[in-house]
Image 1 (cartoon, one colour):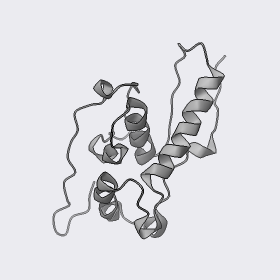
Image 2 (cartoon, rainbow, N blue to C red):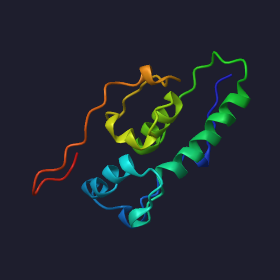
Image 3 (cartoon, rainbow, N blue to C red):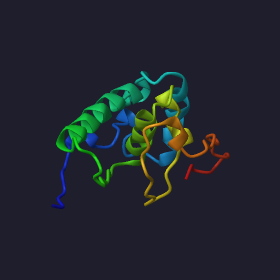
Image 4 (cartoon, helix red, strand yellow):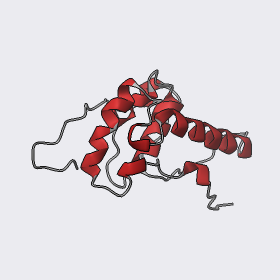
Length: 133
């Protein structure tokens, strides 16, 4: 049957002192994520900690559907979805997740190999006086 399963471990990434601030402030975090996925600058939840939560969620899903073949839709905030796709694909540095942005409302198949990832798009710093989109 069809049902909705809520898993609180798949919640959005905690951005510490930047939570609730303009999106542009995340530009302080994402570049550091790429070089140090364990960092907690500004009291943010590290990419490594998010990956641990994701691993738990994926193992839970796999245990519920050991035969496979099911269509499962994961929904969360952008960082968590992007970290999930990189983690599941086996990207060597999951901290590079910000190079694999989702569009608002985009649905994307999650593959289990690096070849399933879209082409990376490097982060662009916001121009002076502009906020990041």
